[in-house]
Image (tube, rainbow, N blue to C red; front, side):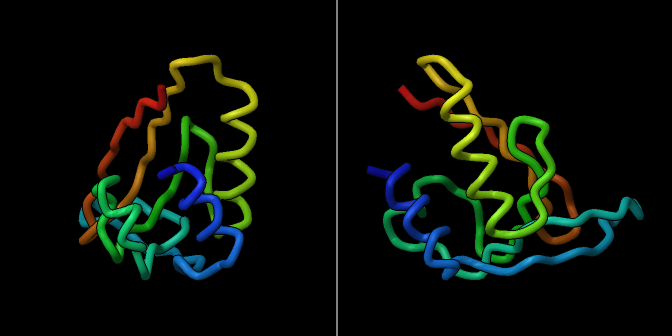
Length: 101
């Protein structure tokens, strides 16, 4: 249910926008800034304002590249699937692993 909700939200391009900036350490980044987190996706714990920069090492720059990357990863990975999402929030880099059974 969470996966379908995330893909649907990305298809509608209602979650965020392309962004770029620098971390507190001065590292440049480019990614997809999450401006709105639908209620059903809040369990993922990626906060509003976070810029998703990569999924399983694949660079993300906007909603289209994030959607494409997620779909490609789901085709490539076997069960249980594991996604490592890297993001920047409040100018600090973070990573979160999600396991899909």
